[in-house]
Length: 207
Image 1: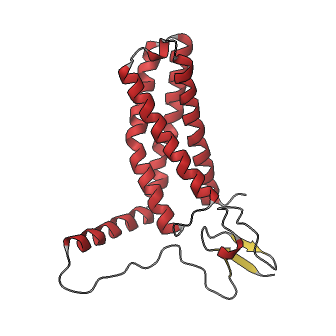
Image 2: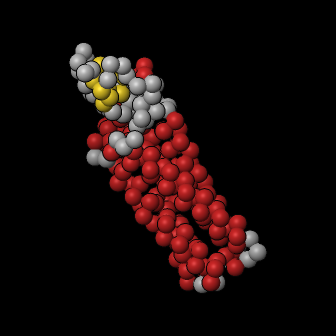
Image 3: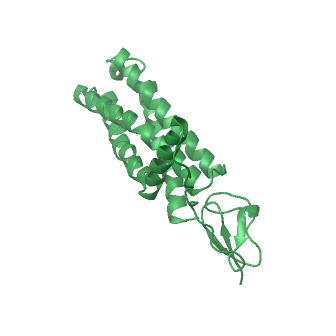
């Protein structure tokens, strides 16, 4: 039986023909190659080395940038960094829920500072995710990657809104807008959950 490999995520399919769509990353069948005929596609191309004794500042910056981002992918910075918001965000939402339901001021403060921590972590999460998408998956835009990007942007934007809302109105958890305030927390948590699920699907190859 023939084996076909997705050149985007590395998924291997067995059958006479490649699948219509990759069950892991959603790439169409044109992205599959037959393993028996071609070598397994390398996830990351060999870095180019620039010859010459002189280089401009721009070229030097690009060389350093390429080296740093290659190390980020090689040492799995994205899955490491994404554990920060994934671990702290549910606690922040739980604390916010307690603050709104029971009027617990201490829980409100805990939720606020936890959310600040999430907000500060998100730029690295987003950049490292973009870097992995470009390097590991060739920058191919499938439904999985598009959804992950949208969810990441939603988490960052809603965290930013909530933090500034809480700064402007420290009593928001006890105000008439507390229902909306808590609902935004749950939407943010849902977006993070979807992004995490899709990330696990890419890493572990579950259908």
